[in-house]
Length: 524
Image (tube, rainbow, N blue to C red):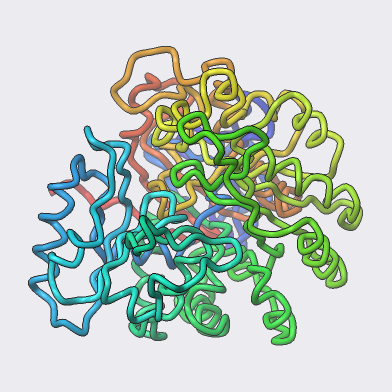
């Protein structure tokens, strides 16, 4: 049986402005595009778009799907504007739960406070008797109360682990844990059961589909007990329902374990690149820099791994014929991993991935362009963090922040993601941020306006780019014969609508393999 999709504008994303009148879909594939007259004789049914606008299915190229589901389950403090407000919200929840429970808040951004300081450990302890952790928006820093610290065996005498910081002041714990140190708590919380993981995952998938997403590249295998636990959850919640397409990055700490499982990929659950964290983030001043932070002289951030360790990880990936995806935010981090990539290149036609690639200069740009490397960008970062990053880096270095246009101009493959739960995984927010480089409701010319890109380029980040970065652009990312029938159908035309209205555009349908997995509810 073949279904003809027509009755609205259909953008192929093959080239600027290209549209077709109709798309014929059979068994989850696009078998033809063209006019209604030429294709209707082959159709057994017609799906009328009712004036809505169809695009290739949007894909988020970098997020943590289970982590996003956790954010939906726990306390979202991303809109909190003061320390006092934060403490009130947390206290209310702490009073509701037994002393042996865990209270988790996600999304703290102290740079939004008039006085940008964290609560003290004493202030956290005064909120109640339960275990408490508060995750900063960057997810490279948490605040923990004494009960949570004790659970992990962390005392004032505990040394910081490699690649992390147990923060202390005058020899006493502050409750702040950075990067590898936070996993001393997060990876061992007792409520991380298969049922918990499945519930978080299901909540996340429902939300992602409502944003028009047909798939996502996710990294979840090292945070929820043995990697088989999240894998089983993905098999049960995603793969069995054929409702979403997940491409899993594999953290280097579980890479060999997963390889031994001989888990088979499917269109709904693919096993992809080895994932390595090489530095932290600007928020906690742990992104690795060639020059020190302007607001903390003497601090260059930190490299999580030595060059020798990175070489070992990359060579391991190569032994398995696999690519490598590296979280690299600071210029030193990016420079370091590019040297390793140059020494140990991937197989022909494969692309390694630099995730974030937040701070570069002309020298790094040239090195990127010379290697088989793709870049995984998060356009929304320019909205949430730019002002704070300006204080961290100074005006001169800030010219190299989130360099979308520069990367595209050099011919690099660039994909777009949200890094959810850090940002809202709405691709329309990312498209708006990439085109305007400003926050919603602002009217200036953008933060680093020379790096703004066109609407076509921005939409390609979530379609063609997301397919190219995993070498699937011959079957995904466009509306063409032979491609998968994954579509995002919106109520408005992103190319003609007022740019300020893009974040408010509604999703009409989300379509995976020709099947509607999300449909906007009718207004009551």
